Amino acid sequence: MAKVAISEKIAHCAPVDCGDCPIRHRAVCARCESDELELLEQIKYYRNFEAGQTVIWSGDQMDFVASVVAGIATLTQTMEDGRTQMVGLLLPSDFVGRPGRERASYDVVATTDMVMCCFRRKPFEQMMVRTPHIAQRLLEMTLDELDAAREWMLVLGRKTAREKIASLIAIIARRDAALSMQGGRGPLVLDLPLTREAMADYLGLTLETVSRQVSALKKDGVISLEGKRRVTIPDMGRLLEEAGDDSDGGLLV
Amino acid sequence: MAKVAISEKIAHCAPVDCGDCPIRHRAVCARCESDELELLEQIKYYRNFEAGQTVIWSGDQMDFVASVVAGIATLTQTMEDGRTQMVGLLLPSDFVGRPGRERASYDVVATTDMVMCCFRRKPFEQMMVRTPHIAQRLLEMTLDELDAAREWMLVLGRKTAREKIASLIAIIARRDAALSMQGGRGPLVLDLPLTREAMADYLGLTLETVSRQVSALKKDGVISLEGKRRVTIPDMGRLLEEAGDDSDGGLLV
DNA sequence: CGCAGTCTTGAGTATGGTCAACGATCGTGG
DNA sequence: CCACGATCGTTGACCATACTCAAGACTGCG
Figure 1 (cartoon, rainbow over the protein chains, first blue to last red):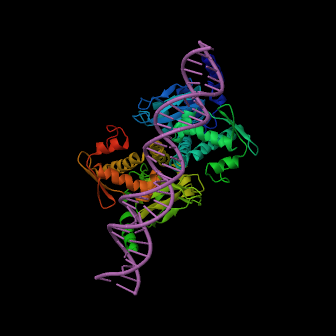
Figure 2: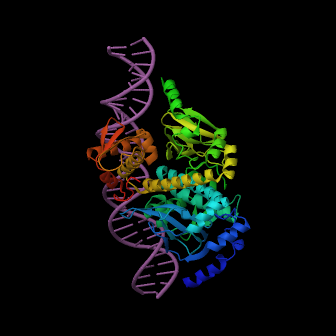
């Protein structure tokens, strides 16, 4: 049952002690000294969400900010007529919410089961003023997100459907490689953490177009598929060409 | 002559003293106390750029960061084949450059004559560590830019050409109104600071499509034009409808 | 087995891109 | 002063890409 799976996850991913935290060195608390961590411990609490659950509704009162500990969530905007655009993909260690802001600007939806480390907003804001290490790290993370958003604007505004798909796969591949340290040469294997519809929302396409272009990339040997979600990339350079990126630049960063 | 115009601008916009600075209360230095300003004065210098000049080339060594004092610049990305996407519009008080980064990620191009207040990067970075007021303000500004970028992702990914044009005009109108405090009701008048081509680069369209849709909005009475650049908006609510936005929300904020 | 959710594929269409010609405006130099 | 070129913008004809609508396939599950 799903319930059981979640309980197991809690056991693994929701340590009471920050020292054991899997995202300790990458999250907003990464720069904190042990005395600062103790302060954070006092205002933190864990929350779990099931795949498909909406974590935050746009416009809702936000009385916490949080770090993603485990699982994946999406940040989306929706127009009145239902058109939706994903504006962020939240992975473990990513930060949710904006200090100083009362209400949420976007919907946050769990795409997998998730664990979040939440901080009550007011105490967190007070702490930010006193402990520059948190603000420093948050600035760094925000600048990175801004770069990612701008990169994505190029994808949305100027790339073809085929290039968009290739770009998305390349980005996920790069991030997977960075985490799992498969590093170097040879074929990469990865799981798409998104449905075709979610990919479409990310890319500003329809799900039919996503499906067609994935099939086309497969037919042309740029990728191969096992099942719907598992992708193998025989030649990363080729994929990057298809994405319209500099094939040399940004090698697994 | 252009040279003369620039010299005049310098006289107006490049005070030696931060106390007289037109962007004093909105730029990255907004939160600084007078002793902190004195430190900034020591590492700052002014630079002037003519309309059309490239301020920074993507990939260049960046040995300064800066605030826009006067004029307008664009932030753009370019693909190898020449497709370009604007990813930011830099107005007075906006910040240019990223502390901690060696090389520029985007092209910065002056669209009007400009004055910039530059800080040598290394001293600025050192100062950021010691004076939290700068880092705090920069975090705020970066979060605002991230919100703007995400708003723009919705425009790029999901809006029609007509909605894109209406959105751009609405955004510029809102910003003009905020500055000039025309506030309330009645027709708004504004100047588009961008050529049709620049608008196209911002919106992920071709300049022909921009031209057609501007003409269409004019024909339908949503806007009227004097010359190519001056726009009158008889009914802001109507324009926001055309943009696909909530016509109630975000009134001139 | 049938159902629901997800994905794929096809046929027809519409939106916006491409290519091309032309118009308006402005500064320059003969 | 006017002709010239340059830059910027408009408009038209045609076309390609991606969207819409629709049918059907695959998978897991009750």
